[in-house]
Length: 295
Image (cartoon, rainbow, N blue to C red; front, side, top):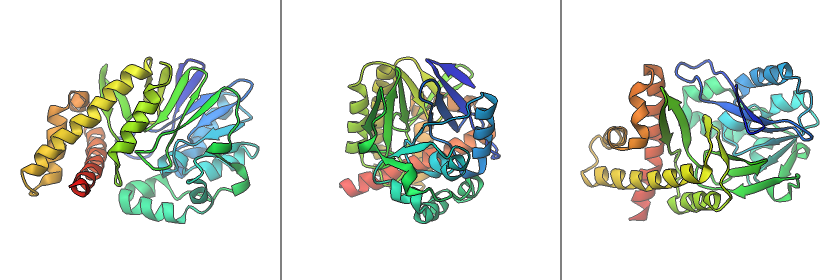
């Protein structure tokens, strides 16, 4: 567990090789107890056990950055244990929490065995959900940040910016930074960049990543991430101009070789590298589809 700025990052362990220090939940406790994302269905029990160990017996709100199953899949089980909690979610995402069948079908198609390991999400009662536009929580600012997903939200609370995946994925490997975009299909670069700009316009604060960690200066990290988004576009366009043969592999290898923000990849364990190759490739698919449709 990582504690910083009156909030705590709880790692939610996964039974998948290479997925250590990858999925977590941020917890703010005080007069109001907030939990940001709850992780997948198959591991939400571990989050609940940790909260019990911390003597957190009441959760007032769950802030959902987006409804993907690695972030919100465990909501049904979580709310069974904390029935008084209310879920703040993008208004476009609530129907997928209430009936997760299409979300589950799409997750299986994209993630395959990983989706099965995460587990099928349980339905959430609509009365337990609050549309992000209607959320009125003291000192909480809700920011619409589409890009990674059209229903993505970020939250500023108590000097902490919970950016979900709007600011990328950020890890430290042997004291070396690793910053990676999460741009799965369908990816809209304009929306993504506007979301980053929206977060950069906020006061500089502690930034909390969904995958997996934190940094002290949100503006500095977001500026760096914005440059990376444009760098990826340039590198992927170059590979696309060289033809379609082995395009995906060439793009992934080019990014891992030429993007300085991915240099920690070489220090990762083989199973972690396998995980990252999968998600880099998924992000590349988003770019390729976007660039092909832009022509």
